[in-house]
Amino acid sequence: MPDPGKDESTKRYLGASVTSQSPSRVQSYTSVRRPTLDSHSDTDGRFMLGALSNAVAENIIAGPHGALQPARSFITPERWSLASVHTVLMKITDEEEEPIDFETAIKETGHGRFQYKLWILCGFVYACCSLSTTTLSLVLPAAQNDFQLSSVDKGVLNTAPLWGMVVGGYFWGHFADSRGRRFVLLWALSIDCVASFLSSLCQHYEPFYVLRIFNGFGIIGATSIVFAYLGEFLDQVHRDRYLARLELLWTVGIIALPVIGLAILPFKIEFGERGVFVYDSWRIFVFTCGIPSMIAAICVSRMPESPRFLLLQGKLDKTREVLTKIFVSNTGRPKEEYSVKVLSESAEADHYYFQTVKNASCCKRIKNLIWGILRQHADLFRGRSCYNILITCYVDFGLISVYYTMMLWVPEMLHRQKHYLDAHPDTNPSLCTTATITTTEDQASSEIKLETFLHTIITCLACMPTTLMLLCLIELVSKKALLVGIMLSAAVPAACLVHVYSVFQAVTMLSLLKSLTNLAEAILFCAIVQIFPINTR
Image 1: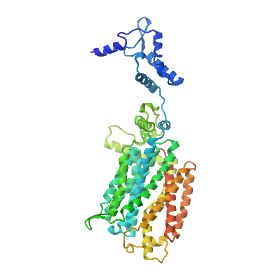
Image 2 (image 1 turned 90 degrees about the vertical axis):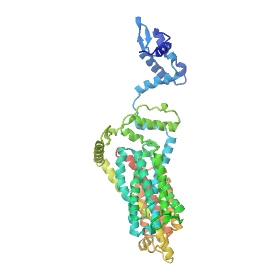
Image 3 (image 1 turned 90 degrees about the horizontal axis):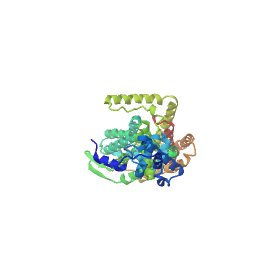
Image 4 (image 1 turned 30 degrees about the horizontal axis):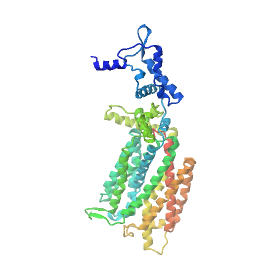
């Protein structure tokens, strides 16, 4: 049944009756809003007037005796508000909008506050990774009495997070491609912080070893995905610069480790009873090193998913929603002003391996996941991709084997050398000599000397100048040339370590080796983001 109120409203809009309109009257509709358009350029004004003319023409119908009259539901332009004009124009331009590729769309969001905030967050995540990865380097000397650790036990304990990394790298890589980059960061950081908290409670070697495996399992997910997550929010102009800057925060993380250790480990803090349950300073140190990962996980939960990943999944509306939020954050303008209305599909979308099937059963989803993994492996180990992955894995194996050996063993080696020199002041042994002849019995105390903390901080600070150098070189020199030159340079201090006979010489060579391998690892991560397509990254 017709609504009388609505009919009355319609009559008022149409002048109480539907009046016939002459062609000149129709033409005058397009001139009603000319004063409103004066602020625009001539081109913009002509476009908007043309759009209004089309809108009017589409709503004019032929009346009796050839007269023209508006459709019953049409409100004449004299009565249009500015909002109505904007709505009509938006509707028309939406229908005629050409799809925009992602690189153009990300440039249209601008560059500013969102990118700075994202870089700080990703840098904090990366600092958490370095902090968590190297925690054991200061735990080994402090926990040797509680766990009765021999040199072999310490070496085995150092492998715990590395075993987790080996398994986790494969596991998180597939989840990053199927569930998203943000999903991996969130869960990887959460697993790391929970494993850190639980391992601080362990009273025996075996459960502590198992939980440190979970630490490595979690932290490798964040370490490997944070570069891709940051890079997929950036255009090609800013990508290398921002990825190189991440290394600054890794250096901050490894500097923070001895600083936190210096603030906690020297103090004789102890709760509980020996032989039952004890919570002492080194356990508090382990707990403290897990707190940053918890904070990072909370911060990541408030960030959007990577727009490139959403586009790869074919979620165009969600991709545009994320880009609009970036635009608003960078410019402070309303989201309606974002110029990109329609996104073109990703070129890699046809090769996406983990297509989402709505209302699929659990078995169906697992089957699709396994099939996607098999297809991904088939493409990954074929042609140029196979060559790239073999080269990067070989290079990364060489870098990591050196880098983590230095990261995990430097405090212990310096700790042993200091104890040996205190016990034998008239000798001048090499670093390798003290590492081989010093046993657990020779180290009567597990107290870490102040000099050990200071020397560890120095080796970490040595990474800062090379990281700053990377920021200048990354856009001037090719990544391949940088990688080759730095790895050749790192071989020099590595060879010299066999022939050092003083603490000063040892610290100097260790600082050079640590800074150069740290730099090479950062360049390799930047190259991986560039040489691998998004669906296998």
